[in-house]
Image (cartoon, rainbow, N blue to C red; front, top):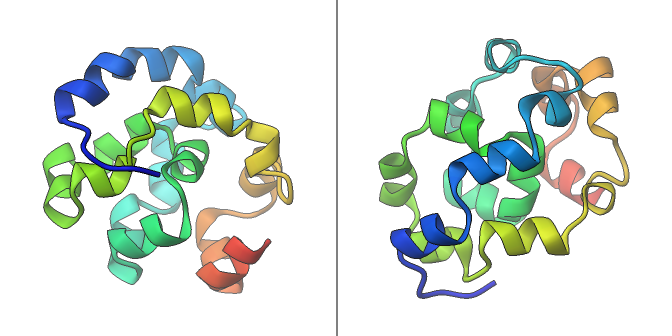
Amino acid sequence: MINDRTIPDITNDWTMSDIIYERTMHDMTNNRTIPDINNDRTLLDIINEWTMSDIINDWTMADIIIDWTMADIINDWTMSDIINDLTVSDIINDWTIADIINDWTMSYIINDWTMADIINDWTIPDIISEWTMADIIND
């Protein structure tokens, strides 16, 4: 992943409405609503245990978008919060959101667990409690 992307570049390449249109909350979470997900584990809870840079280092932005839609991330953290901890170039590394979604298929990223498996069988806290981040990444 690469550097040098400005916020307008990101916005122009892939708007928030594009992301929501392409992967709706219904598609991503097997009929789970945003409040359901936030009630199980907020992004802030995860941030408290791992820094944003830890998450980015272990998970690509594509991975994060698969597990939380951009709407989830924005709802829990403002863009300025993300920028304060990580530069835009660190997060995007010169892949546009569209590129990530095009190059990483859903089936490739969640090969080991389907989203349905994660949401239906394990809550986010269950996953965090049972496996370390390294375990999750290794699988």
